[in-house]
Length: 605
Image 1 (cartoon, rainbow, N blue to C red):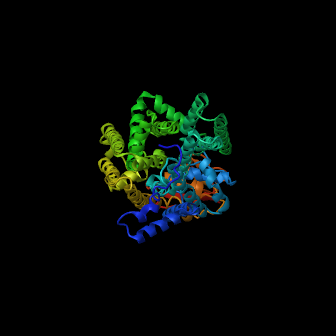
Image 2: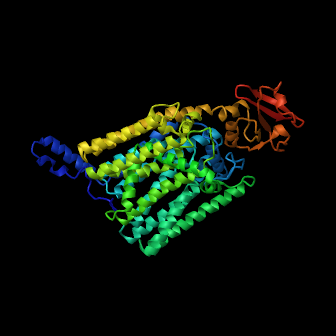
Image 3: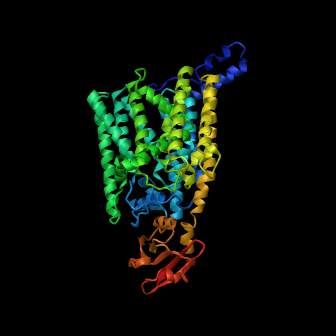
């Protein structure tokens, strides 16, 4: 793994001598020379990268075109409520029940500042998501060039990395996972640049960038806490062991301090806006999951399950990168930058998996809690980049050894989950949104089939490796094109079979409710605990100009004085809709009854 970029494009290195080769027609040589001349022009690669980024944006837009409301509760609604407050609009109830980090909400807040209705605002948010998430392509290209891959091959592999389902799928919703792949890939690239030998000024900029991105990741999601801890550890080692020029190390610490302080100030400001909502308690849940002996077995199993899912969702390339990183840490053949970043990547992978496994609730009704996809998904492009580098650059013998390690890692983690969880994987409910890649690889959209998923991932991986071994390094070009096309197909399939049905099922609780209830802009809504959970989670955002509360109305709790309407669940055992709120204050009356979706809307005179 090199610390700098190559100056010669492997694709064009032999073009000048092509006409001189025996047996080559003169026309072919002239065509190759013309292509080499065209590619070598100064404007070509900037134009190609701009076009590639535009294609990535358009591809993502095509997947979310027409989406008008949040569908992943309570996450999406909570980020949108934060964005609403950051846009200068009135506060309301936090659907998730705690104040979560607002770094992503800050990026999408302009949409809510511009739009006058929730549908337009959400569609603008989807547009912002496409622009942010497509940056993975540019950063993957930069990372591959930094690691010594040619421009053409870097372009194709970056295209494949940016089109993979774990990267694109979560950007189809208003969630922090839209921007996390960009932040983490940029952070690792900056960290590598800072630790690499070279000009002091360049290293200073890289160090500052690594610090800033680490702190910003903490402002985006609680997973960023792991990033900050690892960054601080590396910075401390660099300070003590003098891994970098003092000025660049100072800039790195400065960037980290500024961004962490910014994240803290943002969190404090948001908590002050939601005075009746507690801060996030994720840290406490994670600690309980790690120190409680009764929860430890569950935590370990979930951690290994997430590592398995990470491997199959990256089609084995993530596991291939893990194998290389583990080897690099203990090998003097690699540069210091490569060894340190390799350690950081493995530590980050295991750290996030462990923290997520410990912090997830004990929901016995969901399979995906054992193999949850979301938390490690932002790491897929970074690890895919390293795996692609191995495929392109490693010699046959070394490649086979690393492939063997990757396959062993994937199979062993799968077997562990099957042995520990066993029949429970087939007895509990399946939420397709929580395991989209597994369902796609198994070609089974109704239940989890770990064996078929494992076989599908390893088949894709094996085909790529065999082509590389049979055709040599030039075959990597064909593999890169195939991976890009397969990634696009996989993402479209996952969107059609998971994202779109998931969104459609929640229309009634989002825009459907506000239309049926005939809620006017600026009206305030109080919701009873008996109302459908999805409906209660959606209204914090859908009641766009007013605000919402949740109260125990059925058991005598008074509605807020500012409430204009109240929604309660419709109990079919009640003789009439009025029986559902026996303690309704004087003046409140039943305005709308929706028997199909099971709710009753009350208003007061």
